[in-house]
Structures are given as C-alpha cells and as structure tokens.
Image (cartoon, rainbow, N blue to C red; front, side, top):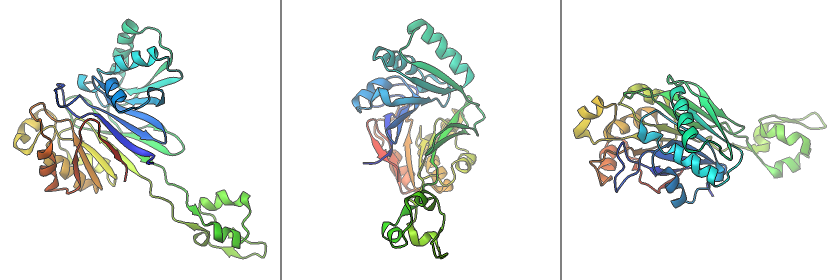
Length: 305
C-alpha cells in the first residue's frame, strides 16, 4: 500500500462544467490528508473518493480566485456538522483569512474543531509545514493576482539495517539507531566496521510540486528543480498560447517545457478551460516534449514514484 499519493478532486478552471470540477487535490502522506486548493464541490468529491474528513488537518490555498477557495466555507461547515474534533489549519494569504473568518461568522459561528490560520507570504519561499518526515514549502507563481505553488518533499530517510551483518558483528540494540543514521560500529576488540557493511541504502526521498495558476515562466522550473512528480496547470492547448499568456495561464506544451527543464520524472496536468471536454489532446501535445505526461481527471489517484 502506497504511503504517498495524490487524489484529484477537481481538474477544471474557473467555471464548473459537466466534465470538470474546480481545482482541488488531496495529498495523502502516511495516513494524513493535506488538501491543496478547495474549489466548489470539494467535499462531495471527498465522499466519492472515500477520503475521511477526520484525517484532514491542513488546507493549502494557492491564491484568492474563487475557483480555488469557494469550497472552503461549505467544507468547514460540514466538518463541524460531523463533529470533527481537533483543529484544521488553513494556509492562506492575510486577505483570504479575513474573508473566510467573515463568512464563517455568518454561516457557522461555532465549530466543533479549532480553525487555525497560517498567514503565508504571496512572495513564496517559506516553509509552511514540517514534521519528522515531510516538509512543505511555497514558491512564487506568475498569475494575474498573487499566487504560490506548494512543494511537498520528504526528508532524507534512514538506511536499512542488514540484520545478518548486525548479528555477525554482535551489534547491541542500543547502537542500531545510530547505525541507521550512518554511524560506523566499533567492536569490543577495537575493530571499526564500516556502516556500508551493516546497512543497505535508504529509500529515495520523494517529492511532489503543485503549480496552480501560472503563466509560463522559466523560474517555475528553477523553483521545483529535481522534483519527482510535477503538477502544472494546462488551461489551454498551444493554439491559444496568446490568450493563455494574457490571462496568466499556460498551455500543455508549456507545462511540458517546465517539467523538462525541472528534470521531473512525471508531469500531471489539469485546470482545463471549459472549452475542452476531451483531455486526450493535452497528453498528446505535452508528450511531444515530455513523454511521461498525464492529463488528470476527477477521481484519479496517483502514487508517488
């Protein structure tokens, strides 16, 4: 069972259609849920995908266009109706926090849980969440209004212990945590046993980047250099590149250019304009530049690689 995956709840742009919902994703990491953007219909999609509301502790908002946060009041109200306890932290710009507070004071004044607001900088470049295994940072995007992306990155992992070699050298249990972190072992006879003889290499630390609304800009690739899986908006196909630029959006081709420049292993696209019903053309266009390209659809779940 994968411990790091992304669920796609909404893959459309500003206007909901019969084919796509507004932007919303849920990153699942070690049984915790982290929502990224919260367009209308987010809570319904969570139910469809059987994502437990009680596991949701953090919501990250990229910018203050309605298709990225108007699902928040309804979701928060439902969490309270379900008597969810504890707290939910909303990572959002100052203006957004004030707006949500005003709305919640009218529609759901008293919640069963604490709503915390982490005021983030529209400039990006800060750590907004960190625990023992995961760190989440922001980076700037280039839209018509202040907008940030989110980079989910695992911390380096410990090496795997080689039990046969540990037993052979009679390594005490108390010394094994340090050996997992790379320490050598000195036997009672004074022999130094290199860590490489006692362990196997650690699993790679995985990463996921969420690039919400943004015009094509080479600086995005710099911000997510080396990421494993890149989500990048692709509102239009290349024939509408001029319109995309004017509206602060990207094409599928430009998303692929960013993935290639970043050295990503996989590209996932979304935020399609309402003019498109079939996403196959997005995959075809992006794959000409970056072969491992996927057009996301509602209900899709991918595992980090």
